[in-house]
Amino acid sequence: MTKKPKLEHSELSGEYTEDDITVLVDIYRPAGTQNDWKLEVVTQNEDLFEWDEPFATDREAFDEFLATIARDGIHSFLEEDDIPTTH
Image (tube, rainbow, N blue to C red; front, side, top):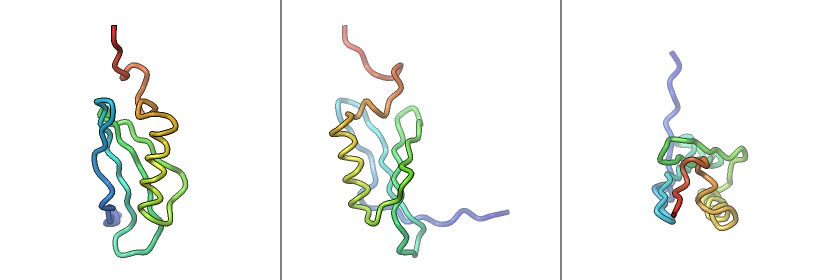
């Protein structure tokens, strides 16, 4: 049986809320290493978005997340059926 490697999570990881939508931002790397950081976003419906390319620092990963929100909006992480509508 293979053990999962222990992970070091960035202090920048955590919940992020905008427009009443909350996602979990997870920035991590293998514990005890100086490896690059990985970025994932998990929605309230447990949809997972992973960036293919790693980041040299956890700050770069978080800045990319913020840039995605600024460019595409937090709704870009939701399925069309999950987007709140107003009538």
